[in-house]
Length: 161
Image 1 (cartoon, rainbow, N blue to C red):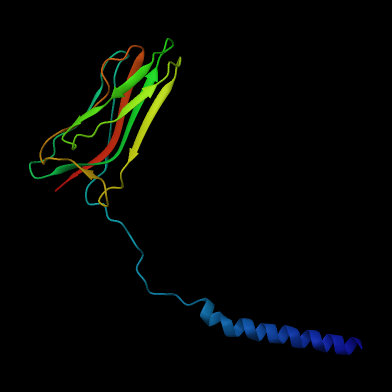
Image 2: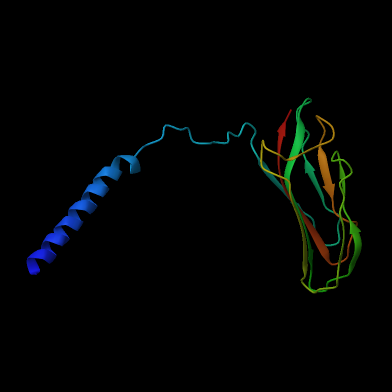
């Protein structure tokens, strides 16, 4: 009886070994394919501007060469209230050379409160928003003077034809 169990175990181990041996060439095939890469032709640039409390803040993306445009990939506006805080009612941003882009927002009186607006339009060389005119600076302007509030603009952009 012991001899039969041992023989059966040897047969099972042998069959499993043959299956592993037969499958090995298929499991280790190396495909000759090229990896997918994204080449960045134009460098992505980060830019920021923080204004003092009680001032309007402008972010200016510099003018590109004459036949190039500004491509804006991300845009962020932060309104940060100080220890007194204030109400912002229909605060409206504006822009130049960006197709009339503007945002309107309201924020309740919050001592040391923050309001954040994020725009994410793509990644470099794939799908960012193109400025209106070539060779011209692009600006984003916070709402007018708002007591007890400081505005910060952040953006990423690149310049290309």
